[in-house]
Length: 357
Image 1 (tube, rainbow, N blue to C red):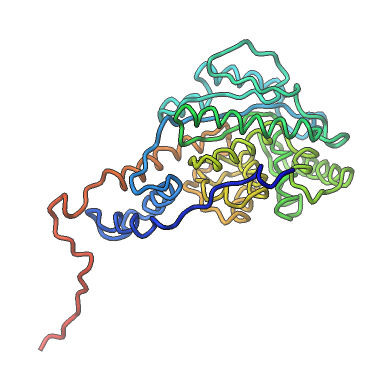
Image 2 (cartoon, rainbow, N blue to C red; image 1 turned 30 degrees about the horizontal axis):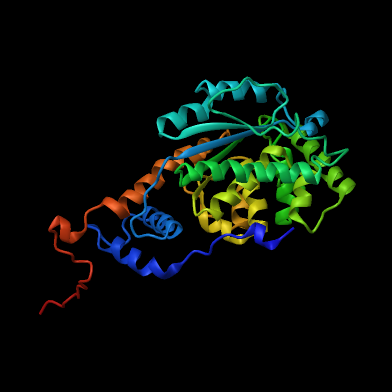
């Protein structure tokens, strides 16, 4: 595998001082818009301009099924995956609603759903097989399948970028996918499995404990590789591999990446193991209520925008974060300065307390 395959441009800090000066001279006290200002700085540096703009926002919700469900690691029937994909394509579900409300184009990617879909203008066929294998027994994917999924993600994102998109959100759909996400988290972050597993779509405590034991046995069966992509193939999912590739390509093309919850973040965990610079392009939308997500974020020193108690996935948290990014960009590009507003700028004045004689 060539190093050149995983190159991401370094953020150029030459404009940082110019951008900060522009923010500080808006008609407001310095720093008073808090996180919006740091977010504006991040987007401006990603785009390498003091006048950033967001074009043709896309939400990619990537779907796949998982053979590990045969081990009873999910409380939900696997048929929900394909049924929800159809729901999303009709504008339903959480992500169908929120993408519409916030003006994002929703595209659903079939990376490996165990169902044959009819063509649809918002469905991208990137199916490699009808679900990953049961990784308690066999590797979830062959290396060829894993790399095909990863490169599918890159190809899909490249196409949208070439059509003008410069901000892209990632979400997922796949019954059982907290199990591969928890496994990858444990391996990459070096955290015990018991601290990585949670209820997913509704397991009780016994179910969570069972899921943890399945993961521990699977890791014992296959071992841990020093190559993150080999671990992705052994324990991951087709949607996670596709998301990881898509995130990587987005960073390579200087796009803003909206990262959703637990499963989507596991894709970013993989991507940043290949090149840490991908994190410079990532806006972490929220911290989810799924156990382990906060520690995933801490591992990457990520500062999520929201803490809404979300645990739905699909890209819903990323969609909620999109208007915040819009607001941040508008502050930098459109908010009036003191001079434009004809308001006296007192930000440089330092008042001294004088004793009363």
